[in-house]
Length: 112
Image (tube, rainbow, N blue to C red):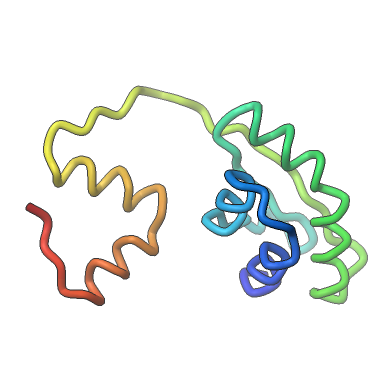
């Protein structure tokens, strides 16, 4: 599913933040035929809903399963995260984009 998701991201024209969101977000498989996408806010939800028919059609074709469905969930904001130190800032960024941690480790970088 992740491979099909990344392939879909490459098919959409560069649309700024929504393209970046799709590239950096992974859908969660909730049932055998349903995946859920968690969005951060109403604007992201609106953009994804606009793309939803294209996303579902692409995923159905790539996964060869016409039963594939997509649901959306808005992430709950439980508390405002504050970054007081470089380590805190890095942790917040790495939580939002796990590839950042791979890059840091791959380059042998340290946090100052």
